[in-house]
Image 1 (cartoon, rainbow, N blue to C red):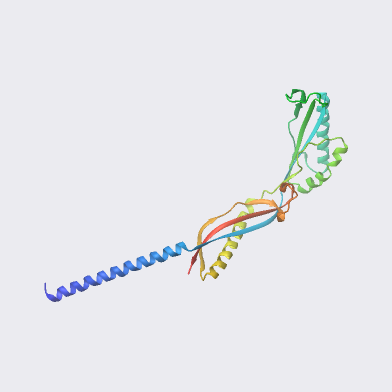
Image 2 (image 1 turned 120 degrees about the horizontal axis):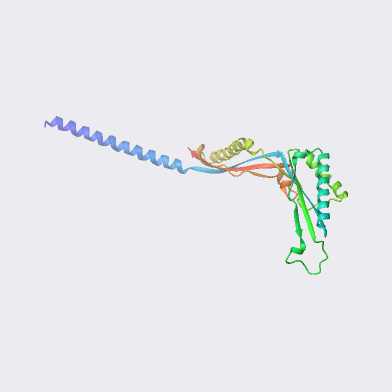
Length: 243
């Protein structure tokens, strides 16, 4: 091979090696840079809250009667249930919103652990009338006036009063998630500004659980008894930080 040809061949080979080394260095640098970027992220929480009004109410009204004559006790319960029905209809609630539950009979003589010598009526009979309606204000008014039934001889069992529910959660979920995400990004941007970075794409997100509780965190003891409620969600989001 002529000397000049060998020189050209060696030169080309050297150039190929140099280019390969440079390319490898670039790939290694890019990989290192990408690895660092993947490791740089911030985890923040975003909160969204909204006040809502209950749109459905359940009101179980349990009446009871006691005595030693089973027929007489049952008749008293029937009169009480009729009185409750007339009262609720008079308050503007339709009969279709009322549901009469099954009659419950308790015979104390059939109880194996009845106290000896106890002066108690033998039979205890109970029945529950359940109101299910979206007429929130009518139920609230009727509940406040239910003492009128006591004057008619109606004896109430323990039920806890009306239970107010909000059923429109699915309709407000998208907007609240967007609000929580916006709040989280604002927190991430503040962190990024303090660290001379900027916020990139979302690395990972956890929507969080929606909770429905008393408005303003205040409760009379049972949040279900309150008409005004607070819907809250806390989303946890990881944002990439880029230089």
